[in-house]
Amino acid sequence: MKTYPVVLTIAGSDSSGGAGIQADLKTMSSIGVFGTSAITAITAQNTCEVRAIQGIDPDIVRQQIEAVLDDLPCHTVKLGMLYARPTIEAIADCLAHYPLDHIVLDPVMVSTSGCRLIEEEAIEAVKSLLLPRATLVTPNIPEAEILSGLPVTNEREMERAAQRLFQIGCRAVLIKGGHLEGAESYDLLFTPQADPVRYTSPRIATRNTHGTGCTFSSAIASYLALGRDLPDAVAAAKTYLTRALEAGADVTIGHGHGAVNHLFAPCVLTPRDDEDTNKNG
Image (cartoon, rainbow, N blue to C red; front, side, top):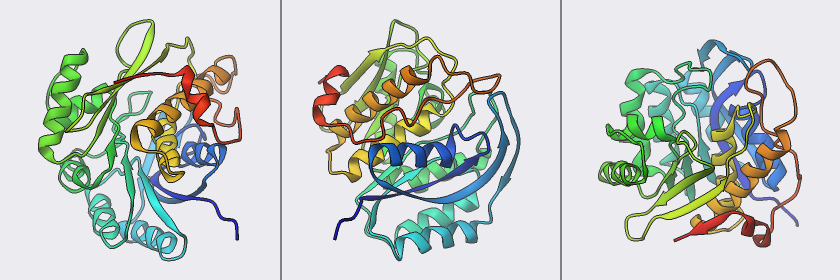
């Protein structure tokens, strides 16, 4: 009997459809895995602003996770917006009871419009309870600075931040360089026993960048669920995100930062498709 790899996203809901749970499920469907979800918070937002946030009761979050993992053959989890410490505690305790192969943690902290998406006391819970459990952590530059407590303005400082996160307990760190300047956008994958792997792509001139972090981390989780190893899963996800940005660059949705085009190619990218993303050890 045919089945799909199953991925669970544990994250917040974005009413505008460009980020959060909605972006995760669109990405997973496009790549070819079966996406499931546990919602941690409801946001009232659009392409310009986040107007309100309501956290979900931690016990309901736990029950959503258990309902999925007790039934579906899911061994890959993506963590996004977690919002509050009690929710993080419930998630960490719940996940410890299941045989998971991969946990991809996207430490969502601030929206594109500048709204804080996590309570201050929750940051320490992310560091102590979730970073050591994650297969991969995918901070952007500001998030890497918050988690590591170090400034990050160049590649050397990216490596220093990654080393600090290893001391906390991380197994692998992908620091995304989209906030840095230059004609190319690059990300660096750090693992304790190997040289950094660099992923580059042309920087795309577009306002439609809402949900890029959610999309990238969900794509990585999807490719891991499909059996790729970590460096190749990141390469494939980088290609997917680049093409989604390109496909959505000229599309006008809303008056602010529109979303990438998640459904530009509703099929699994083959290894050959990754070759247009430069990956160097």
